[in-house]
Amino acid sequence: MVGRKLKRYQDYKSRLKFYARAVNIKITYITAEDESAYLPTQRKICLERDLPESVEIAVLLHELGHSLDDALVNKTTMNEINAAYHAVYSDKANKIHKYTVIETEKRAWQFGKVIARICRIPIGNWYYKAKRSCLRAYTKD
Image (cartoon, rainbow, N blue to C red; front, side, top):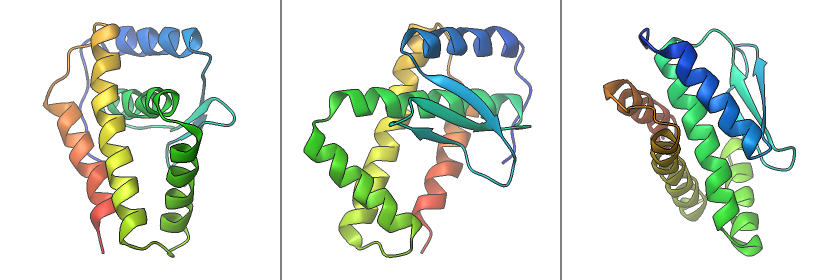
């Protein structure tokens, strides 16, 4: 994914790590072969190592957005979301699964913007480019 340098990258990263600690989420870095992800049962975000600065901040905001989304849905909805992701990643998804995943991803990007406001991180085109790129991965057929 193409990204760019951010003037206040270290400051933004520090603010997001502080926010993650405040909501009891651990951030770990993984190899590029794996995809960044939020693991709700472990309260952990696995973030790809060596992402461009703008992409790293955008993806971190997005993954933190998943944690906020998870906090706001009931257990039944969470089970439906988990089943939809499982179906998508095992290539067994129907239209409802795909719709559920896309809507969950969109909400996580929206919640990422909320978290950016809380952390006083201005959102720019770099955020929307990362969003489009990530959503495209779920809409390919």
